[in-house]
Length: 211
Length: 111
Image 1 (cartoon, rainbow over the protein chains, first blue to last red):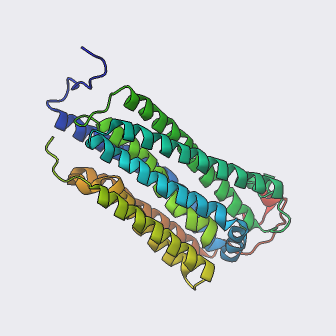
Image 2: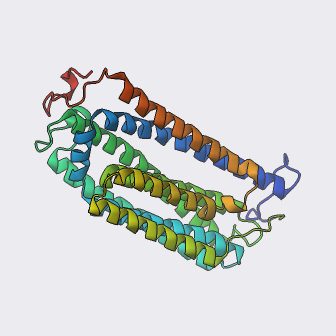
C-alpha cells in the first residue's frame, strides 16, 4: 500500500470521526495560542490605562505605513491560503500548490517589512526594557510601549516564521499528491494556523500603529 | 463526508473585499484623528477577526462543538483584558506620568 494514502487511525471508526477529533484538537490549540497573546493584550490595556498620553506619543513614532502594508499583506495571504482549501476541494491540486507558494512568499514579504521597521527602531534606540535610549521620548510610558511592541511583534513574527514553515511543509505534501479532493483535512488544519497569525495582527495593527 | 455546507469561491472573494474595505476604513479613521478612534478601530478589528474566523477558517461549515472552543476563549480574553484595565484604572496606586529619565527605567518610583 502506498504511504501517500491517508489511513484511518485505528482508534477511530470513521474518517468523519477522525476529522472531528482533528478539528477539535486544532481549535483547542488555536485557543491556547490566543490565550498566550491575550496576556500581552491585557498588559497593553493596563499600561495604556496607566500611561495614556505617553503611549499615544510613543505609538505615533511608529511608521503607520509599515504596519499598514503588513496588514494588507497578511489579509491577502489569508485570502490566498483560504483559497487553497477551495482549490483542493475542486481537485485543482496544482492551483492549491501555487496558492500555498504565493502565501509563503507573502509571509516572507511581511518579515522583510518587519525587519526594515525593526532596523529603524534599533537605530533610534527604541528598544525594549533597560536597553531603551530613545532621546525623543524619554518617558517610562514610551519605554513600556516599546517593550510591549517588541514582545508582541516579536512573538507574532515568530508565529509568522513558524507559519511559513507549515505552509512550505504543506506545499511539499501537496506536490507529493497527499491531499486529494476527498481527503485534505490536514491541509485545512494547516491553513487555520496561518489565519490565526492574521487574526492576531488584525488587533496588533490598530494598537501599535493607529490608536 | 457528511458535510454539506461549503464555502463558495464568491464567498471567499466577498470576505476578502470586506476585509480590505474595513482595513482601509480603519486607516482613514486613524488619519482623520476622529475622537474615540481606538474604540472604533478595535470594533472594526473584532468584525474583521469575525469574518476571518467564520468564513476563511470555515467555522461557518462546522458543527457547534468545534465553534464553542474559540467562542469560550474569546469570552475569556475579553474578561481578562477588561478586568486588568479596570483594576489598574480604579486602584490609584500607580501614579501616571512618572518621569524617571529615559535611560534608567529600572530605578523608577513606579515600581
